[in-house]
Length: 460
Image (tube, rainbow, N blue to C red; front, side, top):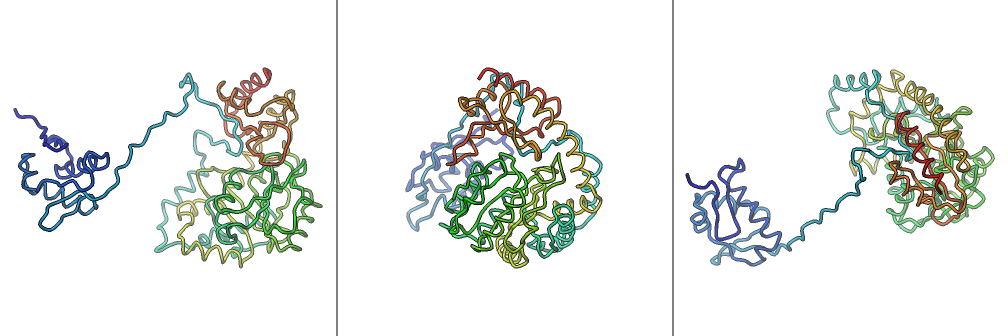
């Protein structure tokens, strides 16, 4: 029996046993030879008749391969001269880099990174009910409203009024893919390259990255145990990004006097305040503090998210602002096509209407309160614990002689991921520390991770 493989004088081999049609095999091998430089630009290819004869295939196979390559721009025909390889610069093959691996891959890394909620192994009834409801609905007959589905905006406006005390209606609300998406949209529409923006230091890294991506000049503003030092703001800064309910990452909560001072500064200078309200639902001493946007919706743009309450993978959040600002943002999105998909919005609407979101927050608050107490108790001997009154993380300030980055490296080598406070600092000096999230792992894994971390800290 003859060989199923057919080889040509060119670097071509056809496999008749392969399910891929012969002309597609031939086209792909030509592409590969051109990409890696074996067939250079200007190389004259054999005629379809000669190629078919060389490969012992029908001329229609060779013609179909050439037609495909010609349509893609790999080859060109020159009248009276033949078929040639076009001037396609060969690419160097990508270098596959090995990911860093642990010595024992059977032991997965535990994580104490901040900002990620606990997701149980089994979805609860409220979650399943929401997605069943979505499955019974037909999608909208056209593109969604660029600001978000009207019914969801109305339900979220009621939720924000009730939970965060912001006097708003659906006209003040725009659905986003989360806090960072809302921030980037806002910067795109309202800022120009070279504009200045004040950001807390230490502060949220993704906000800094978003500002840099928009080529803004970042003005670092120091924080203390109460949050942003408003007195450090200058009048020539047209925008400021703040986390007043639970400063990220140190955990301070901006007191009423400073909030009023910040609003007065914004009114006097005409500046826009961007309030990132990322985890205000989780307070363990008193009720959540009122939102900054409650004081002046004309000067404050409020960003909310489900990433800390339900799941980061939902990619859903909201932006609350004046109706004029929401109209500007929605107009831009209508042109860019950048807004959340209908199924996610429909599911969230069901979760709001049947009370599931409120139930999930209450249940998580009880769970996280116990974990926070345990985390603070275990880590207290190794430094000063701050930011423990709210959120999904605490910050452990370490003695001055300790290098928090080295602690993070040692922790990872021992099996636990933790964030050094130095990651969040830019120009404002301060003590070393660790930003420790207690929400993500199971309770059992949280205890294991803290045991590993305290063993690492005891050797510093």
